[in-house]
Length: 578
Image 1 (cartoon, helix red, strand yellow):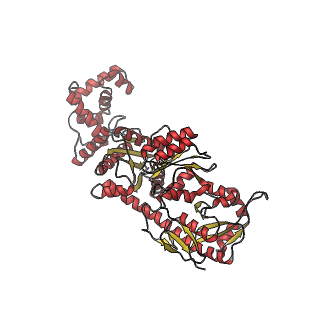
Image 2 (cartoon, one colour):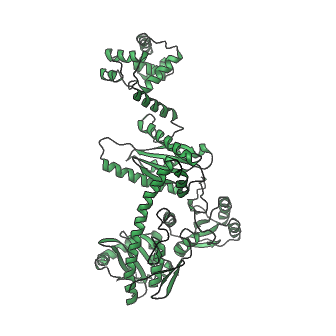
Image 3 (cartoon, rainbow, N blue to C red):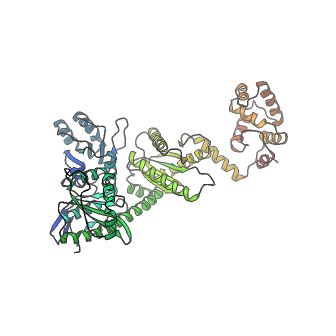
């Protein structure tokens, strides 16, 4: 039997049975979230789930911080407990246009909470005990980002919106009259249907963990279930994977999902009796439809990554297309800042491994930023991963927050790979993002040069160092050579293996304090004073002249020999004084 789906508005009809699965809600609406996750995960306590058509993002509430709330955000409150605290938080969130607050259940209905929820228009939902906050956040973001960039423009496969795995799961569940899960090859849950509360505890445990628990996998593997499932390609009836006969458990009917020779995953239905021949045939055909959706979902994800990189590139280049690109990224109406992530590499390091490390860090950077600021955008452009981050509020505070976010990321990644992050200037409008990127690159270059011993810095922190590097570039381009007193000191040190340049450097660094300067060179102050007199004579320089001191300081920073000893003939030649 072939499954044929007809689009009738937002309804998906399977004419062989006359059943319908109604999906009247936009995939990013709160009502759709409640419908898809159902009572397995979420319970609507107060408010109306139908008030907002499109959720703007997911934010984790932190009582010690004030995050940026996108309009129509869903706020997760893992540390919020009790009616009084919930009501107080609802009042605070009301001014931000938040759509829903999710707290740990069970939550008993409360008159004060109901009143504040009604006044603010914020729905209150309870997260089922045992469900992970991290899994909920990941599921919400997966659901909300489907189709953001690679939208198929209303295309359907078998009557189900292309790539919409939750709608597909509900459609197949209606077809089989049984709750189902769609799983990848590692038994991770990609999507699940409603009515999971009609299944058994093992299914609920699987849904809450977003993967089949190890204890059940071991049972299935010991029975050869997966080997048989992948070999036959037919629906397979599987006995419950429980040892306790008193534990309520249902049988499973599963089928592999295949694209040619590639195994994409499987579909599992919790059943009270074997499927009828008609439903078995329908399940077989449904697996082919699931394969098409998984391929479309995978292709859409790849296209999304490419398109997001293109959008970030357009934003960073500025020009007429920047505003439109920012709008597609959801960042057009507020200040932003660019972060530049680079990897310091050994020249002998394998290019393939280094490329893989950059890609890995870029993905981790995107996940980290999305957790703290859902509307951030990250893309790897060449050897640098760029992030465009919302920066609301006071520019100084926003810049410090960006530095802190970057610093926290590098602390999490550890020291296995030496990564550095430069933070650009705050862009108050889209046209200023090009300058923000340039400043992020300048800060990253300072960090890479080793001029400062930091892993994260904003351009405001290293502006002078960046200017000196750029002046050094200009001197190199112009072919400038050392001249005047410093040139004479370099030549003298090279010829006599003396330390007059280092003596000058120490004296300038110590602001003329002989005692401190001599201590830095581990010599007696009298010896240092003798060298100073010798230096002034050889260099023919008046050290009391502020202009002369400034000129030599600048020359040392831009063109002078490296610190740490006398100058050899090769280095003297490289400075152009021979």
